[in-house]
Image (cartoon, rainbow, N blue to C red):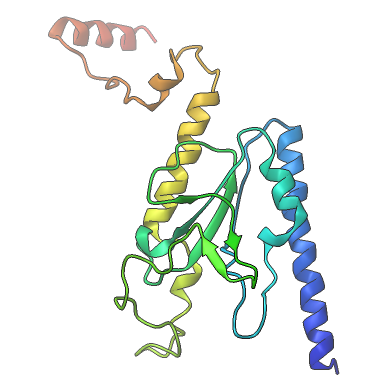
Length: 206
């Protein structure tokens, strides 16, 4: 059997491997002239048990932040419909992020205590339920928190879609990229009896 220390070491190695995949995908996106989006819990610095490892502590984070149009920001998921704050950080070269976001890299004091850019607490102090234990159905309370709330999904979808519109060169048959987002005319409705008669003649000749 693995000792506890070996299990922790194995978990650390596995986590680092997944983290490096993030940076490999960022490089691949740059090579393919594609857009990139990464998410990981905000690095909140020192806790009672030490300084937890974080994707945002890796040297590759700052290296990727120097890429064209790349930006980073943090947010509280409760401001996007989540039941708990869940401080989260994003790294992306997409545009059109609209919402209460806090731009800038994580900052710490000399003792590695978190200074920002997130404020000391979310805008809903004392209003969140704790996610410990199970609910009345015996299900773990943390289960729903594993998913993005709907408002956060919409926040990301809007950024992805509008960034695609900005970069799109598809004008043939659709006009400008903005026209792609506009509802098209109704199809199959004749505006007059004459048009209806013309449609019927066309059908008979087929």
